[in-house]
Length: 353
Image 1 (cartoon, rainbow, N blue to C red):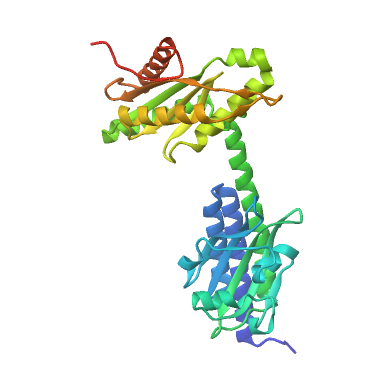
Image 2 (image 1 turned 120 degrees about the vertical axis):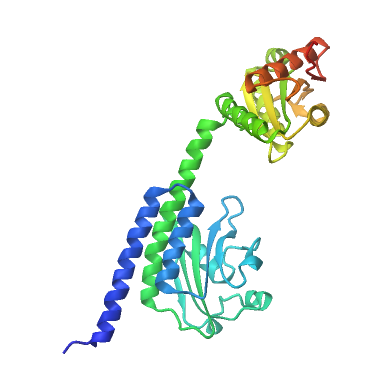
C-alpha cells in the first residue's frame, strides 16, 4: 500500500522540484558573478523560497577578531542587528561557529545555548532555529541561521538537510569572491606600501578627471617625493630604506579621506588624488601630512632615529591643467619647485602668464 496519499505525493513532488530549481539557480549564481554580496543575496533568496523562515541571517567570521558579524539579515528587527557581533560560543550561531556542527532546535526555551537576551533586547519571540556552519576545508567562515517566531511551525530534518547543502554553496561563493578580490588587489596595489600602483593610478586619475569635467568640480593632485632616500640607504642599508618607504606609504593611506586615492608613483615618489578639492584645501592637506611625517619617529634596525621629510607639489584642475596628463605634470613640476626651495616643504603650481 502506498504510504502517501495523492495530495501528499503531489506536495512532495512539488517540494523536490522546488529544491532542484533552487539548486540550479544557486549554481548559476556561483558562475555568473564574483560580487560576494550579490551571490549571497541570491542564495538566501532561495532559502527563503524553500524553507520560508520568519527571519534569517548570514553571519561571517571576522578574520581578525574571529567574532561573528551580521553580513545579511532579513527580519522584522534587521535594522537593530546592524553592528551587532557575537563572540565564538555566544548563542546558537556562536556555538555553531565554535564547534562547526549544525543545530536544529525545535523549541529554544528548552535549550540553554539560546541567548534569550537578544529576544528581550529586540522585542522578538523566537521559537525554532536552524543554524548551519559555512565551512571550507573544515574551517568555519560563517553561519546561516533561520528563525521561526513563536506562532510559526517548527523546522524539521528536511529543512536542516536543505540548508546544510545551501551553506556549502554559500561557502564556495564566499571563498571564490575573496580570492578574486585578493588577486585584484595584487594586480592593483604596490606590494611594498599597500597603496595603488602606478598603472592603476593612471586609470584612477583619468576617471576622476572625467568626473570633474562632467560635473564641473575641482580636482587636485598632490605629488610628493621622499627627501634624501639615498643617504638613508647609504647609512642604514637598502632594507631599511625600503621599510621607510613602506611605513611612509601606510602613513599616507591612514591619513587621507575615504574619497581620496593614493598610489606609489615609482621609487620614492607618491601621488594623492583629491576629488572635489581646490588648491588651498589640497595644500592644507599636504601641509598636515608633512607635519605628521616630521613628527613621526622612524627607527632603523639598530634603533637609531631616522628623520623623514618629503617635498610636496600641488596642482588643481581647472586652473592648472586641461587634462589628466597636464595635471600630473603640473603637480610634478610643483614638487620639483619644493626641492629647489630646499626640500621639506609644500609648493603649489602657478603657471607663468
